[in-house]
Length: 106
Image 1: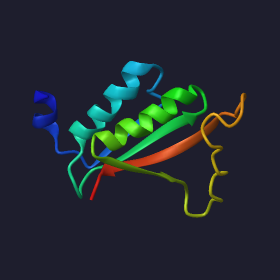
Image 2: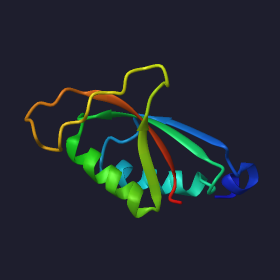
Image 3: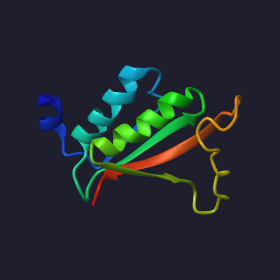
Image 4: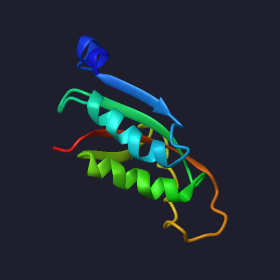
């Protein structure tokens, strides 16, 4: 916490593929929350959807529980990513990389 106070507030936080188990599901949203300042901090997090489907659902719920909002983003010139299947809709979903922009709820 002292390092955050000494070097923050942060404008930009980047992460990729950090959710592998229940600990990551619940702790990563807390880390993002501790690094965010409303109206200032932009978090971009690359996540592989469907690698651990239960973790996906719980992780997105944990973000909301920490007062964080998220949306999937992509390059302005690129086609939007394919719509995600509903959780647990298929036994073998295709892995899909998504970039989430995460910030404090307005």
